[in-house]
Length: 100
Image 1 (cartoon, helix red, strand yellow):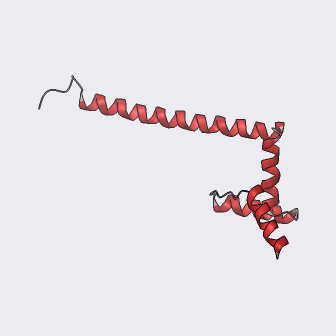
Image 2: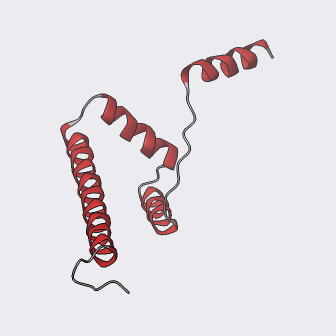
Image 3: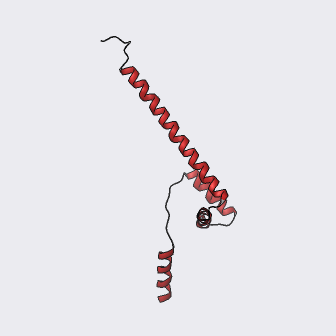
């Protein structure tokens, strides 16, 4: 019983639990591929975490690409919002439209 408590304490001190959301399709594909290679999802994400920690070039490239996609999405979103704001201002403040 004492060994069990020590292991529990050791796991608590050295392990972290991660929770995140992903689409059903992505989850299903990850699960299917893990099954094909006889891996658990835990093993896959632990390895991926270790590669991030080691700054593995292939994983760093994935992170850089993802960061760029995210930045482009934000810029595109801002551009669309800005365009809509400009058109709204023009519509409301149009000096060519006579006073009604």
